[in-house]
Image (cartoon, one colour):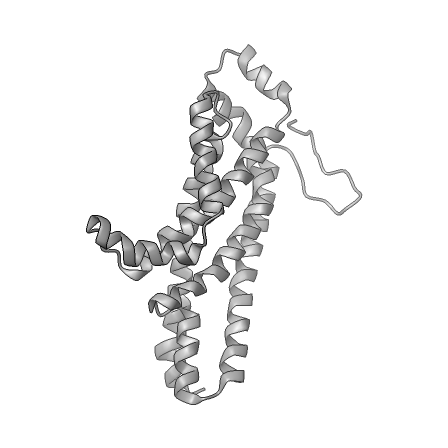
Length: 231
């Protein structure tokens, strides 16, 4: 693969993949927390609506949703989306539904005594959520969120079907230009691996920071993992 193809196609493709991952992850995180907290709401109607959203978007193909947003939405409502934003919406809404279940499960894992303590202190529901539940639940969310983030990174390759010049689309163009399938696709595999490695290391550091904030330390398997545990 020549230097010119690397500079003009592959490197910009890596940057587009990074942007897609970051934008989609931000939307997915917002959806995950909003819907996940709604799944634990006292109102049955709110829980039903949040559950309905989760089931619909978990059961819908992200690729088909991406096509629907790009090809069907303009005809129905006149809202034309550029391919990149159609991809961000599709990926963010889809992975946000999976993330919502992570949030719900982590919130429900907080021991009931912690909720009762908040009620005894006359905290409002939002105060209990912000000051008691989320600080303890967030560290439990990070490992599954890390898995979802890596899956999201790999899912960005779907945008190449809309003509977005991400790294997978750039690899396809280079293969057409050079007819060197083995080399370019091997390099592409390494690129995705390195991007995923950066994400996993970053999430691991975030996990350590959040657990240290509530008095939990990450230790080797088989050794005590708390230091003045917050629970």
